[in-house]
Amino acid sequence: MGYKVAVVGATGAVGREILSTLAERGFPADEVVALASERSAGQQVSFGEDEVLDVRDLAKFDFTGTDIALFSPGAKVSAEFAPRAARAGTVVIDNTSHFRMDPDVPLVVPEVNPQAIAGYGKKHIIANPNCSTIQMVVALKPLHELARIKRVVVATYQSVSGSGKEGMDELFDQTRAIYVNDPVKAENFTKQIAFNVIPHIDVFMEDGSTKEEWKMVVETKKILDPNIKVAVTCVRVPVFIGHGEAVNVEFETPLDEHEARAALQEAEGISVVDHRADEGYVTPVECAGEDPVYISRLRTDPTVDNGLSFWIVADNLRKGAALNAVQIAEKLASDYLAA
Image (tube, rainbow, N blue to C red; front, side, top):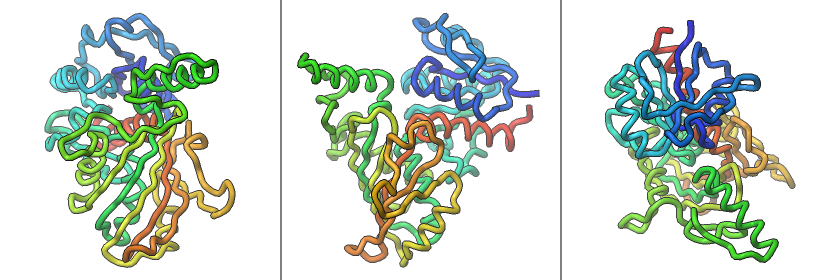
């Protein structure tokens, strides 16, 4: 006997990826329900290669009897409907930012802090971290176990799919407009994204950082270690899928790059591709559709004591969102719920 699973935000980019990932990984579900807003009700979405689901209206759905709900509808919608689902006895795995810093809600990356799932019972909600945070902490975890991390400095290269289908459409439309000499319209982003980079993701905060940068700081502390200092610059780049990060780490004690490489190669969810030659590294285009967090360009930083630098890429729709949520659901089902 399997579980009844609901996917909320099923018509969005992440929702569709969640459905695909559930099917690919053979999640033990007897029933999968696709939910979205009233305007999307009646549409159909794919579940695996052969099955099609009719999208139902979230506002009218009764969660009673639903075991797990994977939410990715936007923070305001999750704020309203995730507690409602939780009150009906459903365990919610929420991909939005709304619950991440709630002290009673576990913030989980299964390769990093799977034990945190045990705290789901306080609110029946588990939070999925920000996409950029996920890939970074997966890379940091095995290194932190070897030599405690003091400080991380990271610059991100985040694809437009991080802002949803609208962001992908805007990159496509602007690129086409430039080639045919039409006016370029910036609607989803603050400036032109085609053939450009924008050092601005989410709203600005009082200290000059953006909320996306703040998320990476506080989420890393909550997931991995509150004592780690993190400095972040988040940048949107004209790539459809896949986030890159240039990471510099300072450790409390010496860590040889060969030791670090060996630890990363053995770590769950990581693929090290680092040949120090032409094409000997992974780019966002190559990681699209793939599950691992890829690490390249690993090297010693000679400007600080105990420093390493490296490059990370991962598919932000998969490991950065859908896959991580499904991995949480798998761990929840195997260790905490009885089908």
